[in-house]
Image (tube, rainbow, N blue to C red):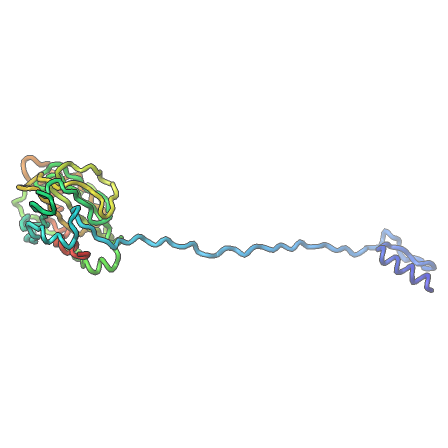
Length: 280
């Protein structure tokens, strides 16, 4: 009996199909089906990275720079020689900007040749070379969406205004604008006029607050060196290739651009000192 038990244990351990002594197999070895075990692989996947990449915070302008080197924003009122005066509707009168000039100030004999600085970050959208009345001039566009809400609230820009039909006395021919204006986005446009030399920057250039963009001069309709500074708000996308007063020397395109800029109210004018007094 002990011998038979030992034989069975040995068979189990060796996993062989042996038959104990004295027992006749009922089936042949070929008919026996031994149990098979299939080991299923277990895959452990790494947890998927579902984190959302950080969104880049849009750049917001929070600073206003003085347009003249050596003159702080708080000092600008001291050198105003002509204040802003809103023109009448459909007319090209008033004084559509503010003029800065001086003689014998801070060891300087004159404002002539003083570096002109960009007041805000923006894109150059117009370069005017020696045209009446602006002389050499630059217009820089700043999207209102890029200005911080706090600064926009302080600036209190004019709301969208209806356009006007210019007075019939203006010698210009209505035509289509050579650029596409945005129907949703608005921009702040700043004009710097009477520059001493033609601009050495080009349309499409990006400028930053405090960057030099020219020098004070006496070009165009000017009797003495000064900076004429204009501010308007209007639809984004304006790109005037030039503009000039409606005279025999100007082209139809230049006259049209001039009327659109100054008279149509599409680019709504406001007192530049509202902007320049924010950080003063």
